[in-house]
Length: 395
Ligand code: AMP
Image (cartoon, rainbow, N blue to C red; front, side, top):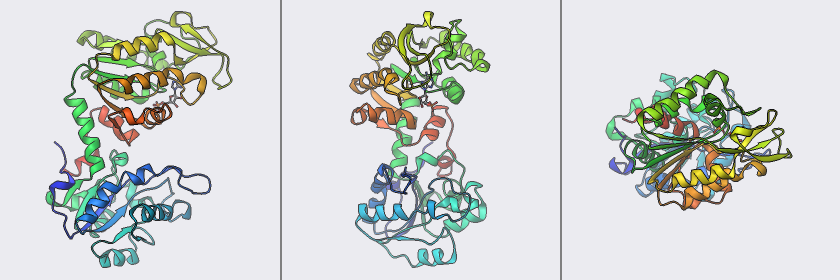
């Protein structure tokens, strides 16, 4: 079941509360270094402005300790919003103090106000009922457009939605797109459906692997997690990252794939290094010949070729997790080449996870992917087959 979309509810001339994700990266001086998250919220905000709404925006930003901290004020975000929307954006002095409530009550159609950082209130992360109710009392309509926090049961994401009935709450455009792509791709993929799963550890993606294995036609494994699988198959992997307590789980996943006929791909060669360092000595090695004291930090050229071949007939590709330590030039080639291959394919390509999105941008393939998810943790939970609390609260 999906939540209502913004266009399905009547918002004209109403006061809308939009939960956004303005948790943007900033430099050591507090300057916004990447405003994509703010820009991507403009669609929903402008739609509400076009429908003569009075708009109350809310977001979290960083990890304040539970009270006002200038460092985590949304003031730079208010300024950037003002620039992008070309209208005044009123910044509330706090989250729900009397002055803020008065400001919200006085807000006129066509005006935009931004509440202070939701996490200045302790009740935000505890999903406090009283705080949720106070937030809800500010507006007639609740719109959630913050996919990146939908896996959190927080007051401005989940609790608040309980105080709006079905006709007065909906998913914003960003959230709708995320739900559309993820539910659609996982539940009704055009086959063959291939999932590429990489990143550092099996532990972080164990549940996702268990869920995906039942849905995909092929699964391609890369990154540090590959070594736990290789070890489970009896290979000696030197000093590569192995989670010894998960070797049995890894074996179970391989067995399950074999049992249900899912093709399971593991690296056949890797780039090994004498230490975890961008200046390390590195060379190619088959997985049968990984030197005892070396560690695998990227997939090798034969594996890249093999994986490219396995992707050739894909109609749907879901990718989460890099193939190697892509942050270091020496160990980025496997991830970059696979990124080019995915970008070139005619499949529907969906990218989940912050690192993978970053890698695809660095590889210059961003514009050639069908969809890049904005939420790391949230997209992983969707891959695990979970219903996100923020989405559930809208239904
Ligand atoms: P994750 O957050 O689990 O998706 O992991 C992403 C991180 O995995 C990236 O920072 C990569 O540098 C790291 N990574 C990828 N391959 C390896 C590897 N072979 N050994 C250690 N770390 C890796």
